[in-house]
Image (tube, rainbow, N blue to C red; front, side, top):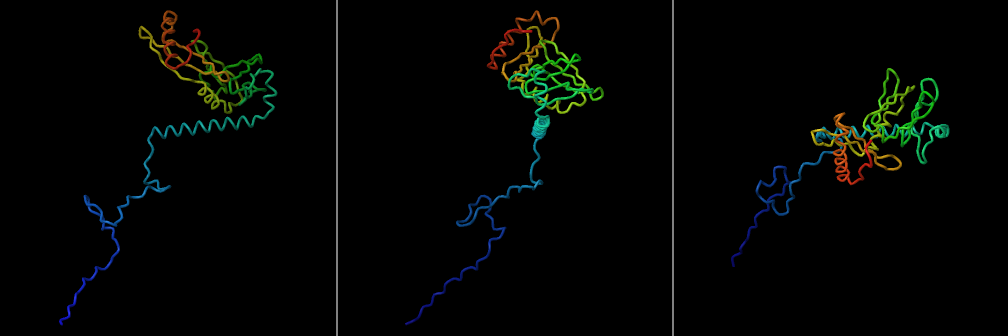
Length: 251
């Protein structure tokens, strides 16, 4: 009886998967093979792979950092004032209930000449009397370094008014004023009137009470009174758009 022998084919030797063994485009990967792994995300600190932020976003971050630093400086100033300031000046200033003193500046000769609270700015006049300027009434505050004088520009009815006070140093009053004015401002709008004129409306929120104050400035000096009904209609329309009560009267 003849013996039959069968020869089995030899298995191909195993080898490691090389980088070139990637599936071709349009072909499905073989069963059991791992899918291609995309490039890793940039690691923290790898600045070369990170795209630069847009210019607008950079400006917003810079403004945010400046605002935070201004708030921190105001808080530090308030803590460094000490409790004696409120006790000494409270009777002279007649502060409202719950009103807090945040900063104070001295006159070049002696004594306090300016006190800023969370609701108003108090200035001492030549007769040693204090005048109160609510933050909702202040348009801006500027400092003259050469003359060492602080100028407060406010809005009273339709015309700006100014108050000037001499100070030894302005301290953090500029940053504090900017923060307080921004806090009270609800918005500013330019409203058209018949005849091509415009009015500039500035709505503020009074600190402590939340009451809205309206400041209206006309583009023309003589036509403001004649266009009063048109101004009232424009303000009423703006109030309805904002969902607030219109002003009771115009100054």
